[in-house]
Image (cartoon, rainbow, N blue to C red; front, side, top):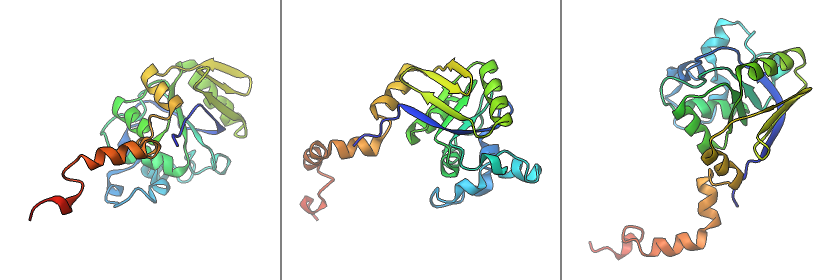
Length: 201
């Protein structure tokens, strides 16, 4: 079954600043992991250490948030897949920002994390609203292409190809294989390298 992503709703955590790169999202020393499990506890590790518990990802009012609200050029820098993985393992299911680095955006698609683009005014307003009231729900609607947060309702932007991948579930490569299991098995039968026992010694 394909994993369609049409709407996300939850509390939001504001991460204020432009050009927050992947090395800040997950520092290089944590890239030695064999799996991505456990990366969530190290997301923004150096920023959190520098802010001595005052980083939004450490503040109690933002625990359990599922939407991250960023600013301009979020996820720039190296192409490490660990960055969106760390964000996802912390519990983030969607990101709102003014712009995203292209490779980071693509890695987020592969994980089913929509990155919605808004104007600088909208991102700042959402950050201010959830700072003032962390219990406010933020809703991303990929069908109507809108974001709502308390009294605010605004348009979001996403390229149509990415949007359709979320709406149809095509972002989910594993789901596609499962949904087309019979066809996959039939194709596999025609591949000489799948059944090694048929190969001569």
